[in-house]
Image (cartoon, rainbow, N blue to C red; front, side):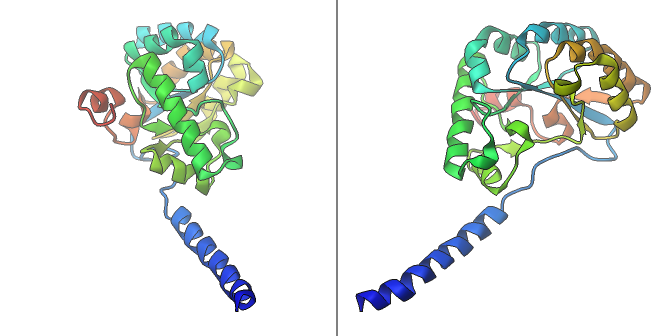
Length: 237
């Protein structure tokens, strides 16, 4: 009887577990890649795990123009540069979560992804006093385990519709050419803190103005309350 139980019950249980797990994972929300195509707004998203030497120049450009960006910080970066992380927030920019140690999320389980997200959230909170609600997975990896972990942790996953590829080209003119030819209503424009990006940012903002597009935070673009509003209301504090 024990042998028959092992032969028939165990494989059936494994199949049942696999089916239930796959159905649960398939039910999670898809990542946000852009706002409405009818919107005359765009969001500039900056993924930050390095490049801190170029962020002050980017903040200076934004201060002069009034533009507000969304900076997705890794937890380890926030641990290393708490004063700069705090400055980003104090100057009115939105703070997002980019994971703690910039792993490959698609190589991790739901539990491992969740632990990385929350560890980053705690580091960002220690540095800035706010807890993000938007998560930009490293490398843009957004498999089902990533999405489920983000959902379990109370996050909306954010990707992009227009990539400057500034981490690779490191060339101001190449960045501008790529943005100029692909900009669209409701875009989420992905950037990183590089020297070329800081140099291109004033022209990117001028380009948006010439097209009648308003730069806003990711939360504003997708119709969510800002992080500051949510924290002040005690929603995720």
